[in-house]
Image 1 (cartoon, each protein chain N blue to C red):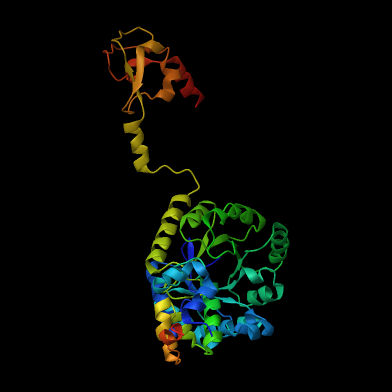
Image 2 (cartoon, rainbow over the protein chains, first blue to last red):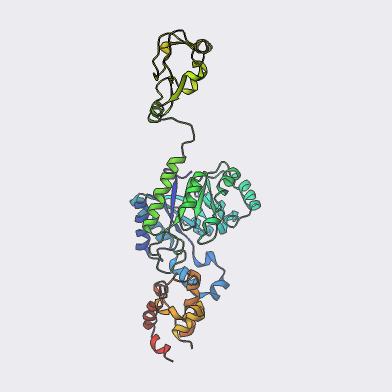
Length: 342
Length: 82
């Protein structure tokens, strides 16, 4: 599993740095300040994404991707900078060469396989050789494809994290399908699951955490007004900071599975539960009947769940009307029997 | 050759004709990242220029685009009067 507190929040900068190293470092600082666990870059080149034919026919795409891609040397510098700033570093790989270029990095926390390569066994196998967790996204995959890959991934003896993802940018909330988190958790057990959230808000991620996601990925844009590849669905710095804050808050409210009662809550029972009070004054020797008592706050007397033992008890000392009933003024056969059984 | 305005209308449709002066990236559904690539391609083809990638990124509105094209020797205001 990824090192760090849960939920593990990955800040995806993608091409938001526009190929500028100083902008990339600014993104690192924003991610760190926001409380994200790691920042993720992209190792792509134009050629590791598109065919030569496509790039020839779409020269602007080629120019853009070439400008936005980060060289191994730049990725190393960013990795070192992440160490210095104390935030995890990860990157998405698209070729075996890009995997190999990461082998000497000392601060590589994880390597990411994008949805387009979810079934690229050669690439995934090479990524596992880096000895860090491999985070795989599952966008565009059918249930059959998920089943096939879950079987295969388990054969690798690798540290894998599986992310639910819908490859729509942005993803409308009603199409985030975060109910799939539980499906993936079952299908890919024992691998941890998470959510790569391409929606415009935090809502789907909040639901994902509640459903068991422990790793989240969300895109950051340094300037949403500039035309960029994913600026339309990325968060600005303040939105991202709020996203991380909410993710941590939600996780803190759902991560405790065992039923635990704090001392504070136990004390509340004294104030908020009901105790038995007499409706009328009762004399020694009388038997307590249902019509003789009522239950009301505070709960520091004989509580409603003890009414079986209370009813039929004999009053041993006079009790005034509207007085809290205590066992010291009663003799209860049922209570005695219960104590003996215990 | 189309005018600067005509290129925008050609890429994004007739409905933007009356709002060109205030048109910005993401201001209409069609001008997203994909629409931006189509716009840049159309501008480059129409004016026979090749924009630097930084200029591609900076071209965030109709009015900003005029200044960017001027750097490449394309006087947009003149072209629109043709």
